[in-house]
Length: 218
Picture 1 (cartoon, rainbow, N blue to C red):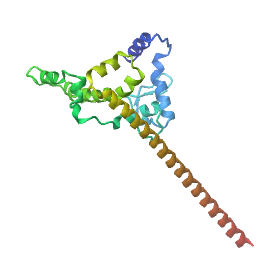
Picture 2: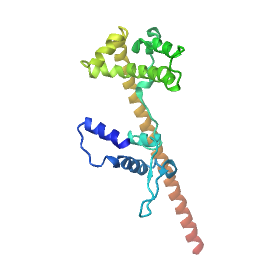
Picture 3: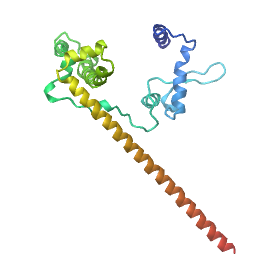
Picture 4: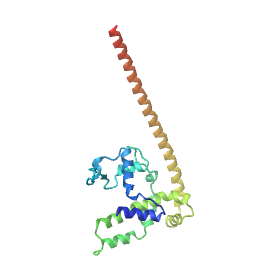
């Protein structure tokens, strides 16, 4: 159950929490406070003996997850590494990270293979995406966690020029982030100026109206 899963997770992390069953309530309240959770996105539970109706989220609601990740309402989800493109000479990234992936796909395609959508999506969607993430995030892993086994594994399976390529990508992404920050500051300044102009215009209109009313009464 949901409660059991949380208990196992928290116990493994050596965390003691006496209100495990209230975790979902805290998430709902946080999402609602951020303006991202509406009543029609929640299911209704039966009334209790006092006539109160309780509601609970039936699934992970993407807008709420964005708020929990630190994004404001309407803010675009931006991950710098997704703009990284791989050198064509590297060939198939998924085969570099998962050398047996073609064998697994052949096994699934065999007469006795698993023909479920889950198996297909795992081999043709999830693993290729995971391979890209590993190579893209690897540019930081091998730099910040040089002695970690995962960094050593990445360097051992990637082409010889991966480390140099990773260094170049870190520089490019840093420049990209600086340019994006400057662009957002410019957009914010323009928005502030526009708001100021609107307020100033409204104040001028009010003054004119007050002046006209005064002249009429005189």
